[in-house]
Image (cartoon, rainbow, N blue to C red):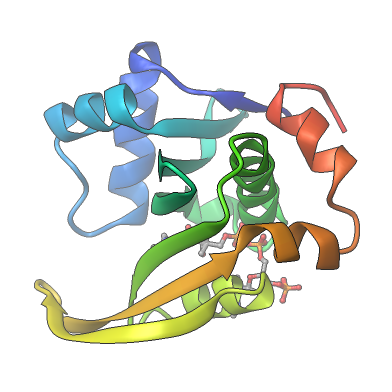
Length: 165
Ligand SMILES: CC(C)(COP(=O)(O)OP(=O)(O)OC[C@H]1O[C@@H](n2cnc3c(N)ncnc32)[C@H](O)[C@@H]1OP(=O)(O)O)[C@@H](O)C(=O)NCCC(=O)NCCS
């Protein structure tokens, strides 16, 4: 399966995936704005969008704004695949640090980030509503992660440009 850039032409699939993954998905206008300002990568299959990662680079730092995998397609490496493609794109852009926020109770996402080298850098009390939760702030040294993670490096760089692995 290919990792490919997503555009406003994919808006319906993106909103469907978001609604399948989050209790409070973004509205269409929020996604259209995200697609204008951030880089959004996706993996398609079985007639729809299976995974997505969205990130906003600002100089040598970036924020991972969203990452999600269709519930029925989880634990098969798609999250890892789309994350690695995002990291390859960030390396190309000479981004050094990647930041994110994750709900404290989101055990799956926290395990996913920890597996890929993100470390906790802060905590915000009662940051989320419906359901109410604290935010854990995490960050990744992008360059170190590309050097230390087996199987990344050149391979992920090719994927980011749409070549099959
Ligand atoms: C987080 C998410 C993107 C992971 O996607 P995925 O395709 O299931 O992840 P992968 O198959 O690549 O898993 C890689 C690793 O993540 C961790 N992980 C993923 N899901 C997990 C779970 N339910 N419980 C514990 N660890 C989990 C494991 O370390 C896993 O490695 P392993 O399978 O060898 O144990 C997915 O669970 C998701 O879309 N969650 C809902 C949206 C969300 O919360 N996004 C993050 C918001 S901050």
